[in-house]
Length: 424
Ligand code: FE2
Image 1 (tube, helix red, strand yellow):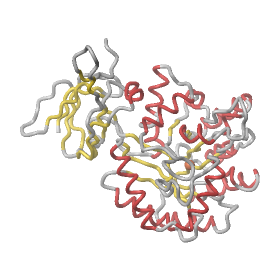
Image 2 (tube, protein in one colour):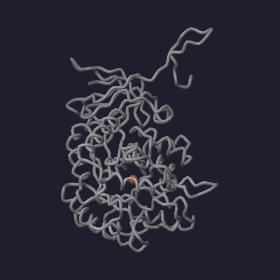
Image 3 (cartoon, protein in one colour):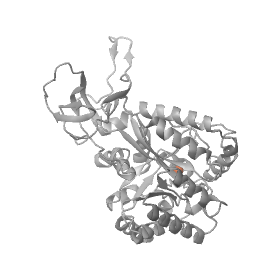
Image 4 (cartoon, protein in one colour):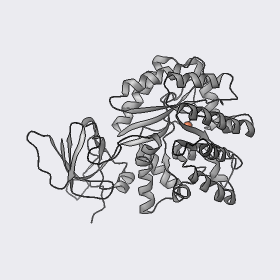
């Protein structure tokens, strides 16, 4: 396959990209076309590495309305509702919903997902189901699983044993939820215990950490210090970190450098944070998302996750990481050109680093994994939630979407195709 006339995320324009044997064989202007090769006109559009989601819950996805909808819309009712749903889950239904979501993801150019899987049900139904799904989707999507003790690894009887069993079965990453343990002390103990477990087994860590509006929820501090103590730098992620939104600035001025020193990754989940946080406020009502620009400025790798799609916590979503990034840039007020490009990075390269994906990116010699977007650059892709014209993995086209267009038939004017771009 030879794709002519594309632009790249680093700003290079008018490039051709040659794919051979599933790899990127060349990138340059006006490449010669080898005999018999399929040629695609890129029409000057952006060719991006695929979207990556660093934080998702595939065991809950597409279960909206089962057994009822979340009336209050709060995190805690969501957790209670998930508790009602769990006994009703079957492996077949879990697999069916997860596979359906992966189809949506591929169509949106989302080709790698880190999903938490609840390990508090001793049957480990969801773990078995998602391990099966991980294998089923392997030819077209990288699914990484996190052993997530939703009800608290210390608070929920048997959760630690279940979590270890899930890891024995092949789950990739150690999860946790320190702010949901009974006390601050238990939360701290859970972080230590889980980081030690990860260090023993040579695994990465990704904890739901301080998903709270309580400025005194400071488990991320322990997560950073344990990361350092155990030599886990670059392998540990703090997800949500919403309490940082409400923390005192003086304390944050100490905390962020500690996180940077520990090489911690941070994940914000903009759609969910803006929906779930601040629910106990009157007005002014807090946004609740963690301090994304400040974390980035300190050199911390920040990714954005989708977190939920049509489940007990969130009734919307479609696997569109451009929607996630767009919400992130609005909530964080990252509206400068550089800020918007950072938000595009937060759903591509930054998330790839969090997952530890090998060979990610548009470079010669790497796997031919990419998405051709109907946009001239990353900012336009965000503005238009650009159509994913072509989704390619290992050189194989997985999905095509026709360009978004409209035919205007306005009185007194000739009918014409609408161009969404700024006229220059
Ligand atoms: Fe989550």
